[in-house]
Length: 196
Image (cartoon, rainbow, N blue to C red; front, side, top):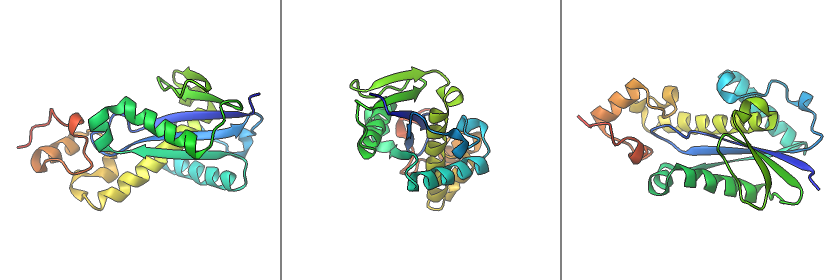
């Protein structure tokens, strides 16, 4: 019998640098969304709203009203095995951390994501917009990844990670061309950028 809904979404599929992050949120089927108002697609929310939602989710987790996990997989795995493998690895890590039981959980995944076949699941196009549980997973993944990129900016300040979060802005591409790649760049994503 299904007792829990689990939302799954990723952040950082396309950047030139940094990890991919997968958020997973587990809620009871009768969860009251009034406890955490304002959830939606992370890309449409301000940075402050996302961070406030993250803190609220942590508080609700502490109170035992929901649970969540964010797993990140780094550039070396993405380069070696590909982005789909990295995302699936992160999903598997979250399933383990949250100790999800296929008999009691139904997964709702965004876009083209899939989980282990044992789980009852549905993949929903633009799910982060349509399903709050996916939207919250999206927010948690993005906030976790952004915090990491802000921190790593202190180690590699030349690339502007605090502004671009690893995405391929013109300035970021120019810095790779001038300085070459740093250890958190995805080599396979940067091969069209010629170092000067």
